[in-house]
Length: 279
Image (tube, rainbow, N blue to C red; front, side, top):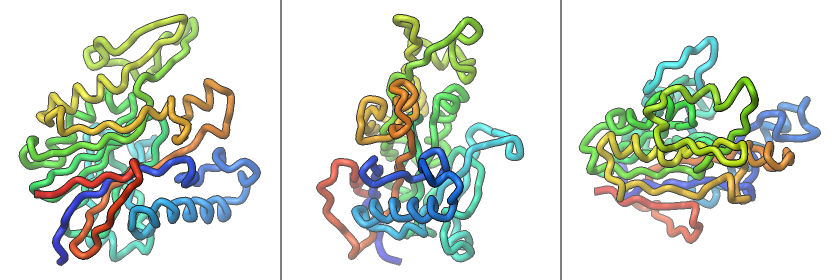
């Protein structure tokens, strides 16, 4: 096996195109699933060409639903058997908060497609393992970010964290029956994170997220936070689309991590591609 030299973390942008094939993101193609899927693969290929990976090697988890009840902190490790069985890992359905990448599948890419909620990639530079965990407001409310360090394992001081672009301060407009989102129930977690101004409730997702990561033992100086997607037109934002009544703003971009192997090193000048050296 080739030696692992670095972790490479990246995110796509609007210029790369939609990373999800949902019909609402492709006006005029709502009834053409095959064309939407084809376009999505072309979009993935655009970011893959820049970073240097095979789009068939992208593995992501699915979120809980009625058939797959939610259990906070669940994790799945992608295996060599998974890679052998699926020509395209994107077709493998696993329901979990966190997915883990190890040296057993060195060419796999893990991550998540996001908009306003954060995706957290954690890397242990000593054990050479990484995790990807979607941390929306609802996941923060359930304490999922606090589980990331223990799920990844090893000494927390060896953990580097890369947080995707996300909406730092989530604006919520309530009404007479709903003053705040129904996913806010743990007031201890949201302490000092809720501010009302001009009838809008601003939810500080960034503070609540970082507080849990640091409480789990991860050093604050080892946490890198990417841009505020709500205020940056380089990124899709469902919330910005609603606030501006502009559906073209809605969509999903990708945040992922892979190993850079010996003999395959590349130099990047894109700000959305970042290397993390291993020990």
